[in-house]
Image 1 (tube, helix red, strand yellow):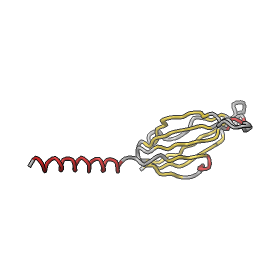
Image 2 (tube, helix red, strand yellow):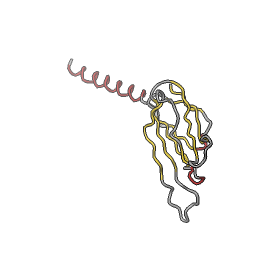
Image 3 (tube, helix red, strand yellow):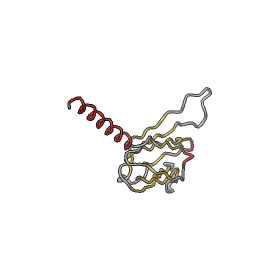
Image 4 (cartoon, helix red, strand yellow):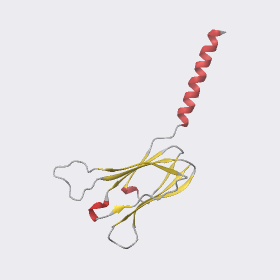
Length: 134
């Protein structure tokens, strides 16, 4: 009986591993400026990565992204330097990188506004998408 039990245990462990890997969150959704206005669906645990140009060439700065923190968690945000070019590209201030993780089922928008510090008017919308988490 011992000889039969070991293969059955190993088969059970292998089946459990395969089931766990099948239920893991899919790979990240990678977005760019061109994806503005679109709608996306994520699974709980899935990452959403966003690369946006830095609008500083017009004197703009970005406000923190607006989103529902019960649905998404902002895991990381960085300012990326421009890619080295010869000659340098005028007005290239690099990119902003954001990484969100889908935390719970629900819907939210991600909105990023820009503003010029010396202007009194309300911030302008720079980028927006709809996100549904299942």
